[in-house]
Length: 250
Ligand code: ADP
Ligand code: MG
Image (cartoon, rainbow, N blue to C red; front, side, top):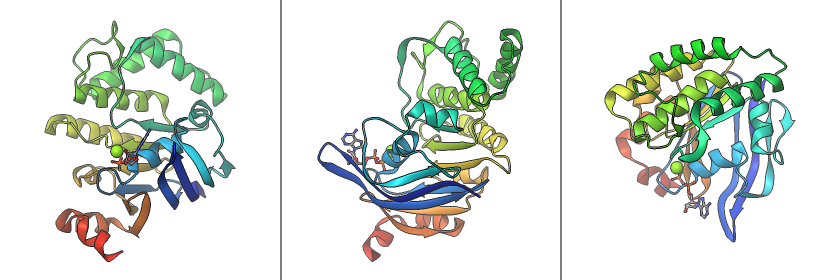
């Protein structure tokens, strides 16, 4: 079964075409890695898959677990099992972090028709995940991402992943801005998430994270188009040779 089918997706912001006829398939349990130079459309693809309202889908379709979700709102996609970690998570002052986690968790459990943990059980689970992510600061009085360092913001994204338990995750450069220790911790958390029935799309510039999660498919984007699709060897080739050569061949 296919988790995600993107069919001939063309996307605009204002008058600018940012994605041009993008098609890809991610099978259930598989991992697709997206690489490409800055500005090639990787974050746009991630945002559009998740239903970001700033982007206008001009043509094409997004099918998730057999359902056409092209016109669905971000929260509807989340309820269906999608989750995305942001390349640059925003600080949202006024949204207390822990209540945000608990309320979102309850929303998702209701959507899945599953019983939610009590607040005490939830706190226990949170403490476990916080320890696993080696989060040492007390975030209980903080707003979402408020005053977090770059690495803390990425760990906050991973904490959400561990608690929300989506079936499909888009990691938009989760590994950028992390020091080596944090990279290890985040890599381990990604590995823990990646069961045989969960699927992922990983946007990355580095091979380090692919030591934790094996890529099944690697795609290369340039100027809003997919210009190459290959297996894990393509990521290694890109690291060695850079993008220029591949782009020039197209
Ligand atoms: P990548 O993640 O590969 O670095 P992006 O998807 O962020 O690339 O950006 C692709 C192109 O689309 C860039 O030229 C960027 O400026 C443009 N773009 C992305 N989002 C917007 C937006 N909301 N408004 C205007 N231009 C955008
Ligand atoms: Mg990006």
